Length: 410
Image (tube, rainbow, N blue to C red; front, top):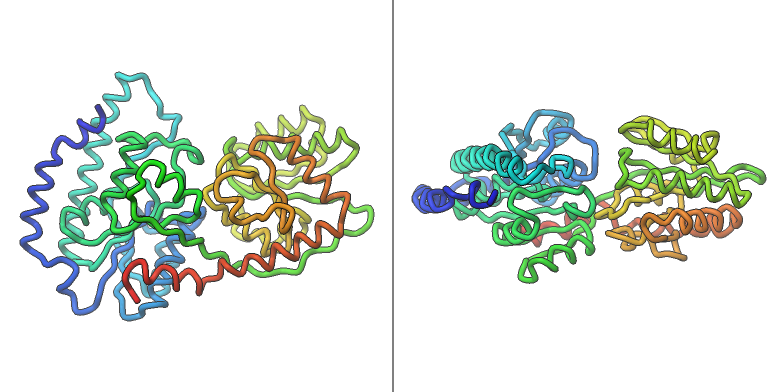
C-alpha cells in the first residue's frame, strides 16, 4: 500500500522525464566531463562515509580531468575532506526510503506514516531532477542503498547511474523499506547501469533477489598504518579489543559473555570496547557475570591507534557485517582477529591461517578461540603476521584500478 501511495505520480514523472530529455543530450554537453556523487551523510565516521571519500578521491586521482561534484545532505567533515582534494560541494535534501525497525507501527499507523514519507521522497526526486538539469553530469553515483532520489532523477533524464551498496539492509542494520525489501532491491537494479558491492556476501544477497542485476565487487580501501605484531610478555594478560558503535547487532554482549566463560575456565582475558552508544547495558552485563574488572568501555575516538597498540587480539562480533573496515584495520595494526562466520568477514579472515572464526552469537565458540590464542603465543603471533600480509589487497591503488573500468573511465 505504501508503494501505491508513494508512486501514484510515477506516470506523471515518466512523462516529465520524456519532456525533460528534450533539453538533452544530458551528460554530453559539458566541455569537462562531470560526475555527480551522492552521499547520505555529511560527516566522516562509519564505513559508508569512508568508502564515499575513497571513491571520490579515486575518481580525482585516476581522472584529474574530471569535474567531480559531491552532493551531501549537510556540510560537515566529509564534505570538507573531499573539498580539500578539489571536489566541489552541493547541499541538497536527500530523503531515505528506509527506516530503523524501531519505527515499526501497527498497520494503520504505518499506512499514515507512508504518506508523508512518500511525499518527502517525491520532493527529493524533483529537487534532484532540477540539480541534474543544471549540472548536466555525464553520470551519477549513489552511495549506500538508502538514498534513491538521484537514481530516479538520473533514470528520468537518461543519465547513466551507478549504485554503491555497502550493506545488507535488513540483516545488519534492521532497516524497513518504504516499498518493501524485495521491491527495493529490484528498483536498485533497474535504476542502475551497475551495482558495486563491498563484498561477495552483499552481492550474493542482492543477486538472490534480482539474478539479472549487473553487479561487481570492489573491496573498500584500508590504508591505516601497517604495524609489527606486538609481543605479549610472560604472565601478561591477553587484551582483546572490539571497536564499533554499541548495539546488539555489533555483538559487544557476546564478547563480554565470552570473557566470562573464559574466566570460569580459569583464563582471565581483558576486553576493551570502544564506540558510541549507551554503555549502561554492557556495564550491567559485565557486573552480573562477574567480569567488570576485565571489561573497560571507552567512547568514540578519531584516533584508535593507541588502542590497537596496547591490544593482542581484535574482535569482530557482528551478527552480519557487510565487510568490516575495522577488521582490516586491526589486522594492519598487527592483531589476529577472532570474527564471526557471517557476512563479509570470512572474505577477510581465513580461519586457522590469519585469524579464527566462530558462529555469530556463539559466546562459547568465541571463548574457545580466545583461549586458544591466549594459551599459544607463537600461534597468536603467527596469525598476526599473516593477517598483516593479507591486507595488501585493500590498498588504495587497487581500488581506483577496479572502479574506473566499471564506470567506463578507462
